[in-house]
Length: 338
Image (cartoon, rainbow, N blue to C red; front, side):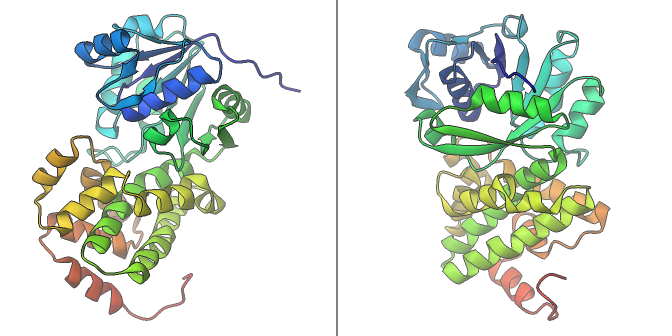
């Protein structure tokens, strides 16, 4: 029987809203946590204010959470290193810590999305940069940073090829208001986290243009089929997409305006250009650039994803949403689960 004990130290790398929320939750669960961000002024401000006034101002830091001003200080003595940066910064950060990680340090990440330049999932990037001899895991699922920071009831998935490591991390994060479930399907969990951001832009476009509830639920349901189709082609387990990291995360990001991707779609529907919409949101909108990477992966794997293809056409090919919807409606009749 495996005896679970919280690690003595967890380093959280990435001090945006999500990294900050995870650091807070991990400290609430009784762990010693060091939070580091790439902006020294932001780190200094967090250390002084005992909160992240820029990204999560209403969530005070627990006593067990310290702010590290230097990356080396955050890593020193850590049992687990949690990376919480956008997908475009993931490889760069792993490369930066490559020579600083000790042999026994475990790595997990909350990064979502295919790498833009290569179409690789974060797990593939991690194995390429750091090799295959280290315990690794991914954290994903239907979670908004503000609600985690506020201590509202939340559930998520932690996936690792090593079931004991997934269970250890789930123990480290879980409290009476935060429940972590475990999985061994890293590919499925990561595909869910990548595709849902693109579909959430589509949901924002659909709602912003007044297409109605019927259109929204059709997009979510058929989008889930596309997500599953791609995931299975990449080696994922089909049932993963019926869980928190698939259906759960998809519904959350498509239906709630806390989702930056959904808000981006809503702003586009109002007639704003992409750059203006990104500037108004003021944080990374993963789904925008991820749409191109997702399309490239689907083409590479020869997987049919008409909704995601349509979203790409709106964002990058100048097609109107009305044209995309008409094209989807006129596709040949086929069985629902073909």
